[in-house]
Length: 187
Image (tube, rainbow, N blue to C red; front, side, top):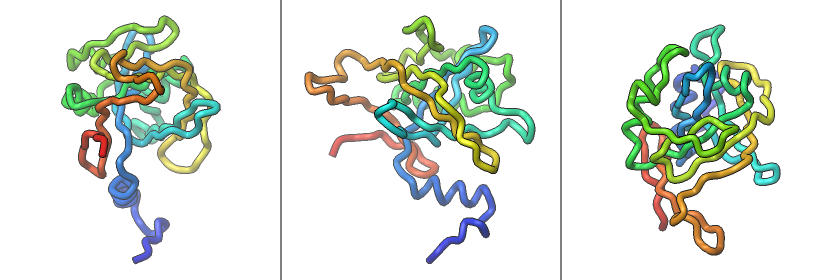
């Protein structure tokens, strides 16, 4: 079967892509504006390059004219902290998918503990085993309802016991397998 994407409506195309490109990492992207900490879950992101160390994330719109808070905050402040989800914080991550007003903070609404690790970046989710502290790099212009944003990783937090002498990382991240969440495990 050949699927012609130009003949498939947006939501169906999203489902097909989400069920095919698996697993996808899922994490909070934490941003700040006017003292409000925004913690939004994203699964449409992936590493882009290791030199420069970059990831790309596709950020949608709240409505036809209003960008999601994450995009607006990144465009304004040029900073983001990506905090990977694990089995211990998955339920909190799911709660953060609920749309809130720009003046509401997911971390306050859902009692999510954060910690300020680096002064120049938004805080990280305390229960994350790893977090990426990123600067805005660029935006990719494409037609449609999402804005692909490239973020450059400047620093990374890793729990001390999760990196070995050969710089191999062992974290218990959760990923998306289509519509479902799965623990990433070694084989």
